[in-house]
Amino acid sequence: MTAKQVVPLIFERSSPGRRGYRLPDLDVPEVAVEELIPAEFLREEPPELPEVSELDVVRHYTQLSRLNYAIDVGFYPLGSCTMKYNPRVHEDLASMPGFANLHPYQPEESVQGALQLMYELGEYLAAISGLSETTLQPAAGAHGELTGLMVIKAYHEYQGEGHRNEIIVPDSAHGTNPATTAMVGYKVVEVPSDERGGVNVEELRKLVGPNTAGLMLTNPNTLGLFDENITEIAKIVHDVGGLLYYDGANANAILGIVRPGDMGFDVVHYNLHKTFSTPHGGGGPGAGPIVVSKELAPFLPEPVVRKDGDRYYFHKPEHTIGRMKSFYGHFLVCLRAYAYIRSHGPSGLREVSETAVLHANYMMRRLQEAYELPYDRICMHEFVLSGVRQKEMGVKTLDIAKRLLDYGYHAPTVYFPLNVDEAIMIEPTETESKATLDEFIEVMLTIAREAEENPELVLNAPSKTPVTRLDESRAARQPVLRWQKEA
Ligand SMILES: Cc1ncc(COP(=O)(O)O)c(C=O)c1O
Image (cartoon, rainbow, N blue to C red):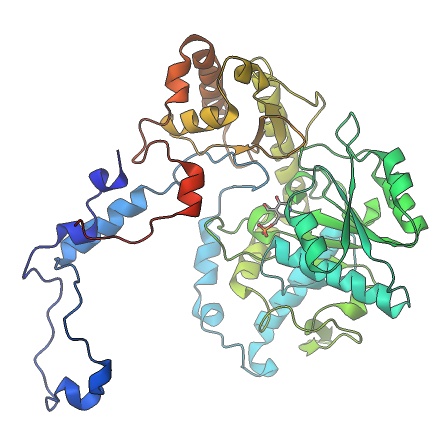
């Protein structure tokens, strides 16, 4: 089955002479198009555009939008992505003319409210992280990583330690960590995990040295496990003169409970679009502010917002690495995060994380009955199962993910982290009800039973979606993105 059979494409709705618009009578002198456009630029034939009514267009786009899956449609347990509910009040705030119509070239005096918001958001993130100063410029988490490592590099160079050329990255790291490391020109040094899923401390000791520029870590890590040795890890890296970068993409687990600064980190990025709830997926926009220690603040991108009495102003840090983004970052994403933080307050943020962790543990314990749990410990906001038991019956994790689509769910993250065979990574988030968690658990248990009793059902999934199983590598390598007239 193809999508075409479900939703006729706009070209297929075309009927000669049908129109979706009516122009008003001409009330200016008529000019021949040849007088306006040089002949060599003129088409010889009119374009083949669909001839459709307004209703055809409305139906076309409405039906297409209904093929989309979104958090507003259903449960979205995509591990490492924190697909939580995005409160509607944020959208109201972001569309207020005083924010939405701002121009980045307006003089400081005329945008004091916006500067105040940026300043205060920076302060809140500093308080949440236990660090000192913030830049809101990075456009997403990976961009925050890039900014953070560039700040670390500039710091070492300023200290006359420019020879430090290695960043240590755990084998469970998100792919953006080694990618960023390489992009900044550092060598990636991989440290293995230990049997509890944390950094192997003894191996780390062997890997650090005079060339260590730093270590990048997400804690809890991508297995959803909190590294209990974090203060020891920080000491090992600091003792050789390295710095610690905290990938805050998993911060939904720790808000108000523990601060990266107190764990020993020097730089943190936050994915505002995940932890602080702004709509994301499908490519953005996001925001990945970084917060740094006092020692690193002079290297932040310019400008940062400072306050003098009642006045807010842009400031160029003394040894700035320069601009990371035009103007000031994704202001309206930052505004939504500001609203989220203000509406929750400190105790509300703590409750967010406590609930996220509770939901994940509840689900993990119930699913353990049917799926392998490679690291059997209390998890944080997400957990990783393995589909190895089902694989022995001939049903792979990919098949399970596809079968979930038949039951109307977005699939979890699969085959990540790389250090778990047949990984299934589930992040329920705090915004779901127990009833939703239970429904999803029942479906996962049903699929495990199907894998045993009727594997064909799972192997041929999805069968209820507009598009059935695709050849995914071909779809990625030879995507057909344009409608072509059938010959
Ligand atoms: C652990 C981790 N680090 C970094 C990132 C990168 O963030 P972004 O997608 O905003 O660039 C992600 C994204 O999901 C992540 O899960």
